[in-house]
Amino acid sequence: MKAMKHALLALAIATARISGILSTDSTALAADYPALHLPTFSASCSEEQKTTLREAHITLGNLMDDAIGAATYQYESTEYKNAFGAYNEARHKLVLERLILLRIGAAEAPITLHCLTEKEDKDCKRAMAKVPKRRKITDKFEIIFCPAYFNTSREVIREFTEWSEVASHRAAVFLHEMTHMSWNKKANGSKGMIAGTVDHQYGGAKVKMEAKNHPDKAVANADSYSAFTMWLAVRNRSL
Image (cartoon, rainbow, N blue to C red; front, side, top):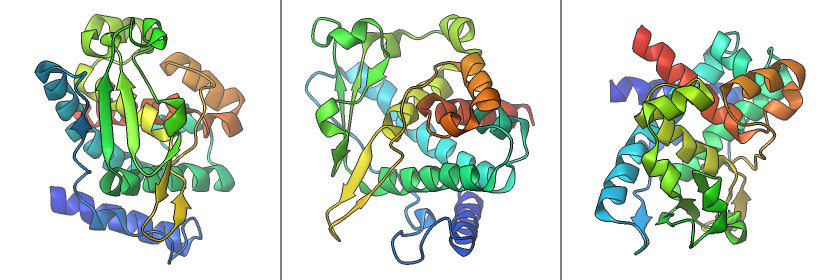
């Protein structure tokens, strides 16, 4: 199963290169990096929190690989249209490029995870996770996870996002934050843009409206990417 996924991923990226989405000399194949870079944790994370984040990180890799394959070959699917709008060549190139570079960065760039309380970071009063502003352009990933991330239940997910599976949702939140960052690969001195997304809309219902009414904004919206991966996970479980 893993070998098949990596083969499809290689084919997707090769197709992207042929069509001009990615240059042949600037980006290594994500399929050459089947394992994501293992995260490290700051002292702020408990052992239980570390276990939760490791599980989400494993799921994250599967979600990203599935998303690249679906974005490459299934851009007429309901999941793609709900996240990014009707097919448009320019927008499709942006979506696929962001997903591929995100996958490569996740395999190559070190990642440090923090677990903070509302007292330690005031943004945790309203957020599940966030990216430190000072780390938005960096040679590594750094994400802060808040109490709400670890306390999420199926009921909360259904109420606020239409999504119903906790493990995939946590991985999708992980991905949401990673899309905000840029990754500076120091090995060759060039900056590899991971996604550089913003937060136009949150949650499944608003993501769908954004894709329908403002698709150019949807392809730059962080939650559109996490919604896409979640909808694919739900669909794939029903097959």
